[in-house]
Amino acid sequence: MQYRSTRGESPAVSFSGALLAGLAPDGGLYVPAEWPRLTPADFSACATLAEVARTLIAPFAAGDALEDAIGDITADACNIPVPLVPVPGAGYSVLELFHGPTAAFKDFGARFLAASLARLRPPGARPLEILVATSGDTGGAVAAAFHRRPGIRVAVLYPKGLVSPAQEQQLTCWGGNVQSFSVRGSFDDCQRLVKAAFVDPDLRERFDLSSANSINLGRLLPQAAYHAATALAVWRETGRAPSFVIPSGNLGNALACLWARHVGLPIGAIVLAHNANRAVPDHLSGKPWQPRRSIATLASAMDVGDPSNMERLQALYPAFPALQAAVTAEVVDDGAIRRRIAADHAAYGSIWCPHTATAAEVMARMPAARKAQGPWVIVATAHPAKFREIVEPLIGRAVPVPESLARLHELPSASQPLEPRLEALRAAL
Ligand SMILES: *Cc1c(COP(=O)(O)O)cnc(C)c1O
Image (cartoon, rainbow, N blue to C red; front, side, top):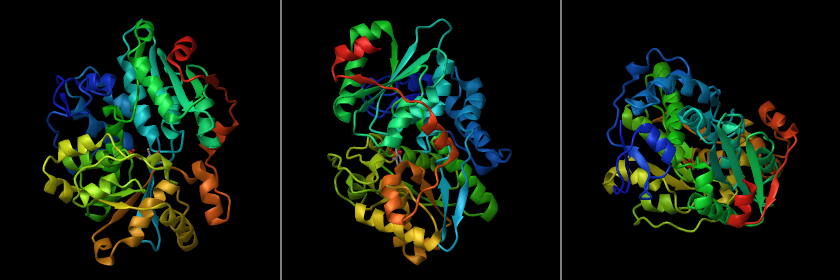
């Protein structure tokens, strides 16, 4: 299986080539040159998420150096429960993707990528240095996933004072092969430093550099697996293909679900729930594609004005009418997020994180006739305990903290202050 760039100006690469490169040299994103075709019957022997992931991902790695390791990699990355929890009275179920080490869905992709890259290191190679600029969630998931992987080091750069206390703890509690830098500057300064490091001759001579960023193919495929496993479970139980509502920002999770449906999984409608960053909903409603500057909202992990995965979406559906038929999107502003968190806690006892609340709001607005076409699944992208400052005043009680998060919060934390200059980063690595 070969991968081509969405911009068509770079040569096709292998599966592991795409994982190692992240972004294609022409600035595009890697997509499969041809699509595997699967049917529910291909998964009849799969009982666990890891087994579904193996069956789904193996054809994507056909002929690759990692082909024989896909079973071990998926077992490693997908060893996280993904319960589908009905919300009695609400008319839908919740796919909880927050039972991993950092309590958000990004754990799956980060762990798959870590398990893959660890296996691609030649014996005796120089250390692989993963550089991540983070505004919050990604850095923690990547640090957790790469922690203690031999031959790999991680440097996490975050803007000092601009991440929540819980997020900072998840960025700084690892030690060992994970270095955390609190950068005196903004998220954009962190990202600029990482980009400068990639083209710096001194650093390139000392390390193999990689980015583990969210557009890496290795982060999408395991996300396709949990949509597939959920769809198969519902299909087996009810004979119907579930429809999904997905809180979306950079469109990684959404693309993963679309890819799962595209290769043949029984998935009905796919609805994207966006916060006030409305570039995608505006486009799908018929306006020309127009990236925006991002605006800050309560669902901060979805504050993306120019989603990079839009290129993959357009590659999958080059004709606009096909795109509009494939997926729809809605805007949920901060006021609606707040009201939905309070209302659903009162009505069902559910506690949503601000991201998940956008999907719950889409369900609450849905006309009954459309709802009846379900079964509907909303995707819970993070545990509400990660966003206690927002959620607790709205529901008037404490959010129970899951054990895995509580454990992280007890670890000692350490970070190095860093000036936002390349010389400073060079000296610190
Ligand atoms: C990253 C993230 C999102 C957005 O996901 P995309 O794949 O970027 O669309 C939504 N919710 C949470 C909690 C996240 O961390």
